[in-house]
Amino acid sequence: MKIAIGSKIVQGPWGGGNLFTVSLKKYLQEKQVKVSHNLVEKDIDIILLTEPRIDSSTSTITLLEAKLYKRFVNKNVKIVHRINECDERKGTKYVNEKMTDISKSSDYTVFVSYWLESLYINFGLLKKNSKVIMSGSDLTIFNNINKVVWDKSPKLKITTHHWGNNWNKGFELYSLLDNLLGKPDLKEKFSFTYIGNLPKDFKFKNSIHRQPLFGSELAQELKKFDLYITGSLNEPSGNHQIEASLCGLPVLYLNSGGIPDYQKGFGTEITNTNLEEKINEIYKNYDHYYEKNKIFPFNSESMCAEYFKLFQNLYEESSTRKIKIYLYIYKILFNLKLLMLYKNTIAQIYYQINKVKE
Image 1 (cartoon, rainbow, N blue to C red):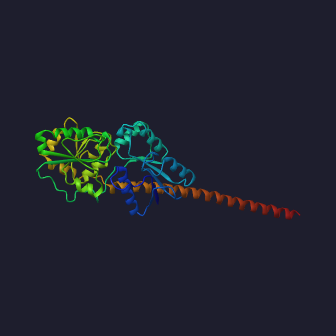
Image 2 (image 1 turned 60 degrees about the vertical axis):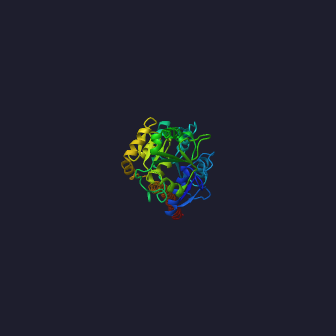
Image 3 (image 1 turned 45 degrees about the vertical axis):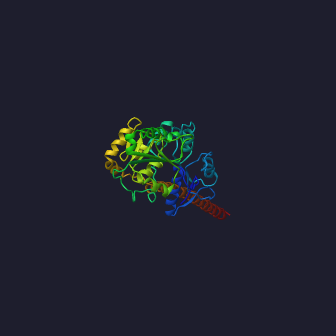
């Protein structure tokens, strides 16, 4: 089986889409699947569109290129579209329409959360050939091995991390937490460290800011903290909160976007109005929240296994179709052969009859 993934891999700190491509490519190659990021070869079985927008810096295959390949190069190729974006996340006004159009031209659509699936259904994307495959992070990197559980001293260390610096990444909530830590009683019990890029001219007053980290370095840093907070709004999935949970950090999250699909039952839902109450509650009953997070199930291994199963089914479906076409052609040729044989036999009989008459 040959699969073309429509985005390039960027080395170093980058967004969740890049981490997805890295994990999936590694998994597929371990399964002896040939993976490319272009449409050079003529016998590709699956095209996975992960970032099909022309203006994307990581896109390697657009919808138009995939459609032209299917029409003129390989009619049996299956086009799968993974949706991991929406207008609601960044306040844009074109993404939902673009993603809907792409999915309508694809053979199959994958959503990264049930919230995102519902959003696109309400937008008008009614499609039978679709499913939700939850995202996950690499357990060989993001895990709770050697994680030291907070022993109630000195401070309960809170953190979050983002590559993107869009305001909707949660900076309203992070600003609120930063202001709360200006209170002497809270400053004695808590600290907050933000890892990643900040919006232009944004500064913390009572918190620590660190530059973006990546991979093992990020995982080791996350394990130094005790509690994770995400204020991200309308996030389709959000690798940041997955990485934190896998590293053993209880997660505080807002009821927004797809993050509740991941954190419900494992993390703790908060609001802007009860943040102080919740962090004090966790301070008093930390072990309970730590234990609840330990069974967090979303990782790249299970995610990639679902994609592989989907690709196998589509590949087998395509192979079955090929066999049916071959059988149909064979049947036609066989019938033509019988017809020719019949015509020759009739001609011979006619010839013998005429010969007898003579």
